[in-house]
Image (cartoon, rainbow, N blue to C red):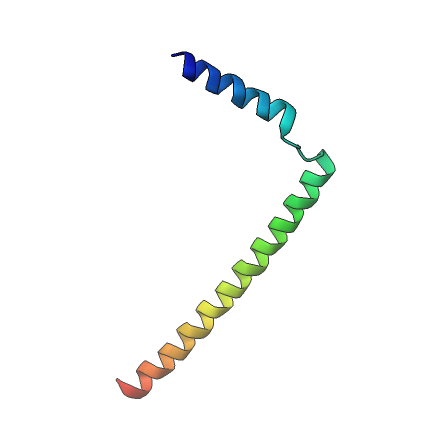
Length: 64
């Protein structure tokens, strides 16, 4: 039981005193970057899906 209490004390100490938390503006700019990157990746995946779908439709109409 003592080890568990010590673990939580050390964890709390590390989170409060040793972790460098981002400022609000850093957090906002990082969120914007992640959102834009996610949107770009989603658009690329969508375009790949549409392209492969049309290519496979053409393939199946030619050979089946």
